[in-house]
Length: 135
Image 1: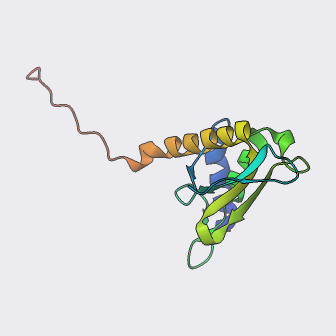
Image 2: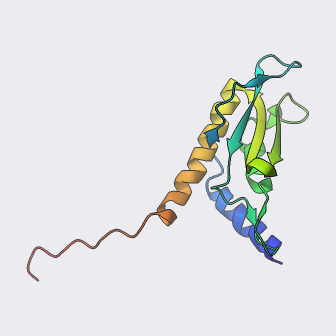
């Protein structure tokens, strides 16, 4: 039941920002694909995004909704069976994306937008402005 709620809530949240993109990138040199020299791999940390399933006693890393959003909004034709790929790394709380440079930039934009959409919820409420009119 909780997993279904997570899926609905997570999907609804991601759907509101479906056309947007990207994350913290590993500082390692990108690995290129032997199949397509224009494709390289980047690890994106997504632990701060809604990628946690709370159905178990402890939250479980589950970036499937974020991964589906990326596959649907970043050059959908470039993923399987295309040269691009995406998979989860639970150990690093990250997703591993192999894509070309233009599509990596789009991934970054989507993840950045997801973070920006969460930002208002993370910030404390603004202080009330005092009434300077004396009323």
